[in-house]
Length: 168
Image (cartoon, rainbow, N blue to C red; front, side, top):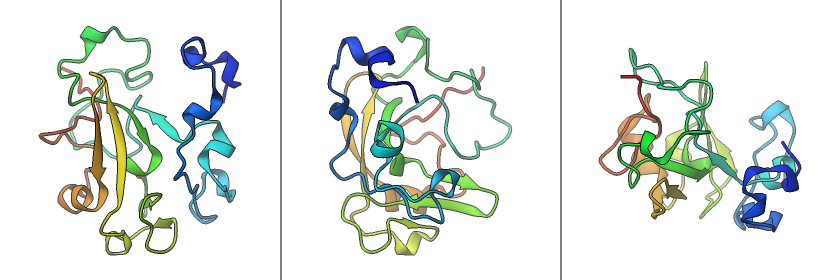
């Protein structure tokens, strides 16, 4: 991760704490990136949020991403056709990591046990994550409801959110 002062948003937001979610609970050791237990993603990476360049999960075949390398990065606003539905920034729990043997779900808000689970039934009834959309609007994302309805392709567009731009 770049040092906070070297990041593109530094000129607008000069407090590193702005990128820290108070509910950031990190990940359990067995699911943490590089296998390292983390008290918080902010402590490990300098941010609690993921900037939607591309999803960390399978895309329903045969869709290809419009830009599989950079995603939204470096694109003009006009590149997004529905800015009020297209996710720009989200907490890590909003879009789980998909491994070959299943998903890793993280729960930061209203936890009902372990921070990380692989099973939908272990997600809290109130498992939520905030989303910021390209259009500037914000919404709370109900993880359990969404994942129950969309597994195994959890990044597919829904009536209220789009995670990626497909290649035309």
